[in-house]
Length: 226
Image (tube, rainbow, N blue to C red; front, top):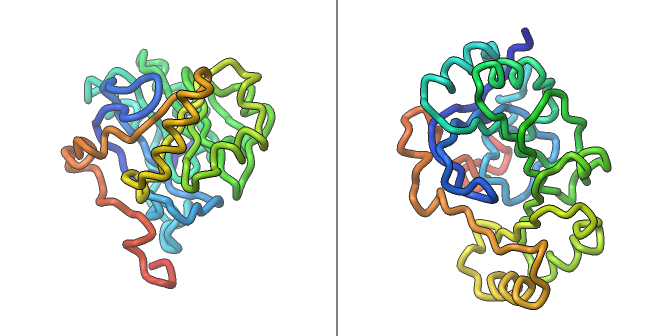
């Protein structure tokens, strides 16, 4: 089987999107070539945490741990999880009747059968057309007041018939201008746009599992990324 470099795994609940509030086991993988400047999981791409330099865990072991948690869904995230071959992991999870949800930027081909795909595009690595077609929901990170307009011009978001969530970038989650840009866009245009938020952060539910690692945003790293 294809062992994977796991940054953390823990039992929480989905704090975003269509499946908000569902009991979820998170598997966060090392490795990300995208490097968003506001990343809240930058520990996954720390120079010492490259996929070839960390302990790897077998998919059946991860699936057993997820099943033992009693979760409703399993969310595979990162970093950018699609840089890895997820076929064995998705097979082991689905073999235990666990729905597999993937969170990806969409810039890399997806290897493995997924039950739900959340595609959150990033400017540093634009999504592949095949990944856009596979997505079940889009999540846009709104970091500037004109972010929504730029994304709607860059991608055919309307043509896929799926929800488009508008999330304030977390460091600006209380910025009135960012919030107003989301409010106005949803009120004026409606579907497929929906206002979103990272509700799990308000509950601090991830931290309630001792296996969850501390927030690894860029603010926690020094200038040389360590």
